[in-house]
Length: 346
Image (cartoon, rainbow, N blue to C red; front, side, top):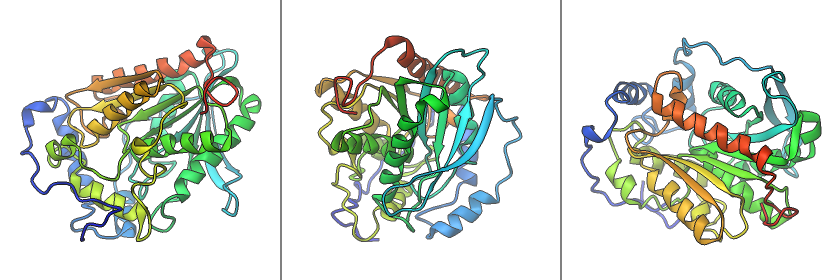
């Protein structure tokens, strides 16, 4: 597909994969995921086919992490949009007494794939590790609902959660937004909308290997273009589906890395050294710091995109999850609350 100003094509000559950079324990999982994942941008050209391939995969044999309660709900979507499905996970009140953080979670999948079910285990792990109420968002998918529909859905879910913190059992000063991959993009973009629209106030953003720039022109895109599950070809296809024919990849809501990040809440960003998106997460941390915001990068040099989904199988994934959980849990004890009512717009 010819490149356009909204979906720039990265340099055509990637670095050769270096198998020694990937943790040996991670290699079987990266290869298995690569074999099972639809070849989007290659043999698989349309979203419907990609979704059918994913739906046909066998379910994980691992038991679902136990939480105190799970409830599917429909909450108000953006103006003119249909109700927004969410799934609410509640932590064990005996282990986690008192008001707890509320986490609005946006799943990954390139804005095209995945849903509440594919990320059910991730949401449960977040709930357990942070002792947080987790609101997982079933935002509208591209290409049927291209940019910026998903961003507006994420912000609508954030607004709903902020208004329901007491009912959810949360601490009103500990509202968190989180997301992995494309979901990390939506989390960051939803904060830009929150700043623009006067709220809600957010204490922390947690971005796990986020996609933050449609340009796809970093060294890590070239260095990790092939051989580590997520490929540069996948990225180009996802961005094409998300932006559609009229979307502007330079729009800060599409590419939060290009935005003025002044006044956004503190960040905890997880990056993986063998991930094409690694440099985008690192650049976002630097940009936040330059804008006066506290930001922490939890970097895992031997890991690949998607490794957090292997908490029960990879020690690095467990360490990353523990770090995320600790960062979220601290929003209660710290008393910090960044946003229009707490010092900085969030």
